Length: 346
Image (cartoon, rainbow, N blue to C red; front, side):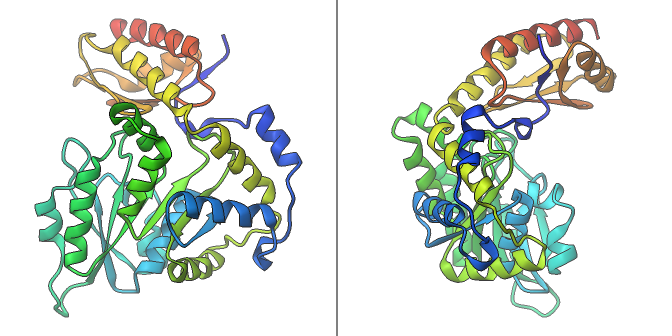
């Protein structure tokens, strides 16, 4: 069996059909605004998520950065989770490039930020403090789906204090598909309901949706106009990007509902590893499984042995396994068997 790569859902490769769509795409110069495939994608994702406009970006990191710099000025701050991607895993871009101060807040066990903690972090109108300008949430967060009612309450709290609200929705469609499976209804309707909570949303296409590259920022036209200027300053002006936008269009046509398969494969892994001695497994809402090892267990050795057996994953004391487009049910089952043996022997 070939290597089973569970390091991230960013490792997917374009399908044959996606490559064909890319090869047949119409292109122009997106800096001049005349790439028809990019323009069509931007119009489509904006309409899909109920916003006025959208801007195609090379990466989710750039999409979030452009959002933060469009919402905030130098000396402003944004409130954000301690484990959120925009705070912890994006190179400090908001602070370094935007002079925006992050105000990190501890997460609750379900991935939420306590409303009381959000309220306590908002600064008064006082020259001693940075100006609280924005609340940034993430959904999914660590593979967990934030309840819609919680998102609505957090956004309402922020707006009562004059803050805007941004969503890092890198895996927004995972959240929507999982919610549809649990509550019924259409996945796209759930995605729209989540997006409706926020002033701006960043959504990634190169994770579970399987495109080779790309994210989009959606929001009001005025905000997107600001973000376009930031994107240019950040080196993100694109030329014949229709090749990439065509891959995203294909993913939106064919790869949203199949995210349910990734969720099922993650559940398979979690069930197989639950109950082993010295191991605690978090049952996933979506496609990310966390395996916590008891103190004294050598996570690096587990990762190394798994690699030698053809299963790639990440972590030290907490292992992370991510299912995606290129992982079949048979591969998930095989990976589970390999990891059960390694963890039982460790």
